[in-house]
Length: 139
Image 1: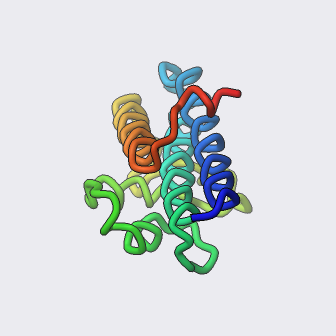
Image 2 (image 1 turned 45 degrees about the horizontal axis):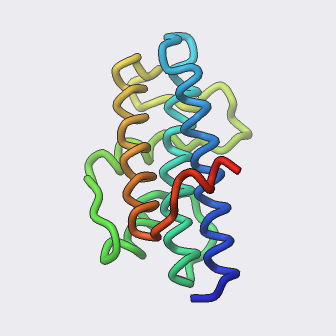
């Protein structure tokens, strides 16, 4: 693996960390649960893309977590049911009224916290797999 690939993977992880830190600021605000849930989806997506970049895996541009995971499931093991559920949160930004909504509507505080915990666990696993010290991501 080249230094360039590692650097790009680290940039994906920094972006994922920004999403996680954003969630931490709003996680207790019931009004903002769709935003927290959306950031959780984004953190998972960016974490998975860090592995894809690191491993130089070819994949067409996608936001579909299931497609991303299929490319790297031999590298990281995730709860596919949770992955499928959080995958439902990605809505094209052309439809802001639906951003972060689930099939049954607005996420609850419990949903938002579960998504955050899942996103944090994916991020932590990816950092471990790629041997990235989280402290360097804060610089």
